[in-house]
Length: 95
Image (cartoon, rainbow, N blue to C red; front, side):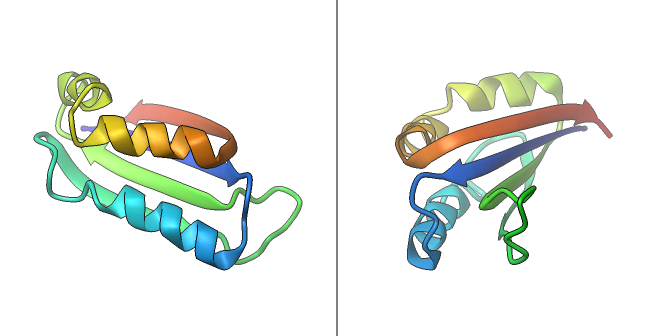
């Protein structure tokens, strides 16, 4: 299993903008082969170290993660997130 985590800092981090981005990420749930879990959470601490939004997914295999990158459900969500993010970082590891 592969855990894929992406943390987003948004250009507009008002609650309604964060929720709109979270909804877009959640729209992928159950629609991508090989994706076992998808969780999205908005930060509530708002500390100097906090991101605005975190995506955590679990994939069956590395190949499933690779296929996700170009999956037709993921591509428009990725484009949207690129348009609204200030920056992001990711981590991928075996579980």
